[in-house]
Length: 442
Image (cartoon, rainbow, N blue to C red):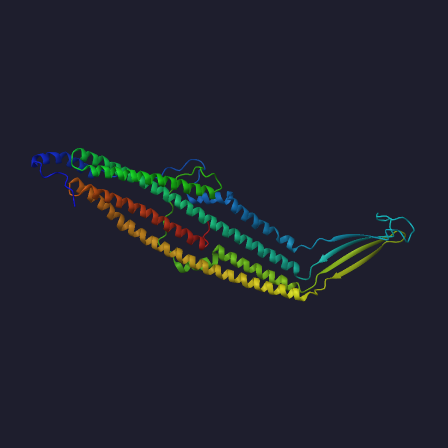
């Protein structure tokens, strides 16, 4: 039921005299433009981070300790390739024959040249044919796997950074909208108090306006705390102090209109970091299987000995040694193990492909839904809410609607704007997930 502003028991002339100044005030309020949209603050001087996600990603690439560990491990794996193909180190032997000097009748000694005979021997192990090449190939495969795992870690870190920055940006926009809404409500409060003093509105309307302002201020405090939380999360990913200053976020790039799902799936199969890591795992397992089968063949050693008797001429001996691959049961078990490991690696690769396709489908559906929602919100619902607000203000100025209708129209417009911010955030988060799964470089 609509509450009339003027009681019917008053004389018509008195009512008309009271209505004229109030109507003039409300008519003027209806044509007062709303507060201007808050403009993003200017970028901070110097190297202050936070204005865009690209600067954050480049900083994290250099300073994030978790990624530094992955990068160091990948570099370490690369350095193992050369040693894997190298010959084993030779060994040197010193043999003191008849160190008790029993044959010569002298006293015992542990000094070369003062025993019955001194032998100097150098032995060089020689791996079987092709084993060094296979060891190098296995080391290269493991280095490739380590590099792929580094790329997986980086893709995850970059996606976390982008998601944290997008939430930081959305909180900043919500904060600006909340301040604008508070300014609008304060303007309504002034109008309400003016009409209440003129006796054109009941006290409940003024109290309602003040209650809405208090609720909006509480929401403002909550949003400020949430923005600080997102800033602390960003600084944590950047290996900075939680309260390190961040620049106000700038507007991100426009969202693409449409994404071809089939092309994205093919790109994910060819470039997804997790899928590539699975492929590198298959390479490692295949190389290890080849090395295991090559262990059927023996290894060799070559030795050269210099004999120096105490009383006599020096002589040279040449030694050739072969390792006998006798433990065939053990070797067959290792070969079966290598085959199972290859099957497991291939299954993990296939699982990574299917998982990437499934997650990509879910993210693509969320993105498409978000784009449709943004078109409806921005093209239909927001103009309707704005038009309703303007019409309600005009009707309120003419006394055709009550204060609650004006307040409800303002609330609907604020909620529509906040919903657009949240929908855009969800859409951009889905796009970030699509780019991570599709292997888009960051």
